[in-house]
Image (cartoon, rainbow, N blue to C red):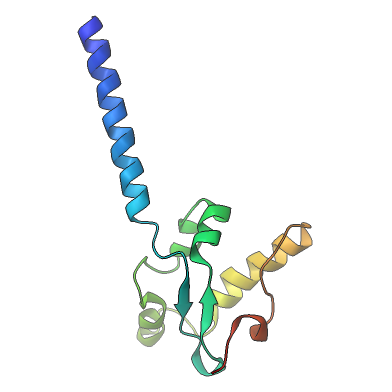
Length: 115
């Protein structure tokens, strides 16, 4: 009975450690620059969003966790131009602002950087 308990504890710890390592590996870059079309590039604080949202699928349900996936889906016609920004980013930022929380930009010019 004691051996089974010890084996269960060791197994649970091993699984927890494996998931912890996996979570660290898949965090992605702390900062990213997203393609912003004719309005210019969009600096994106990826790590800040991860920490705040705690659920990657809030955003990544709309597009895969791969570099260039948004542009690829737009080119395929799966995503419409501005769909991610208007339905995810700005909508969330406005909701956070309305709730009285610190919020991100809500206008195009606050995000896009023209060179």
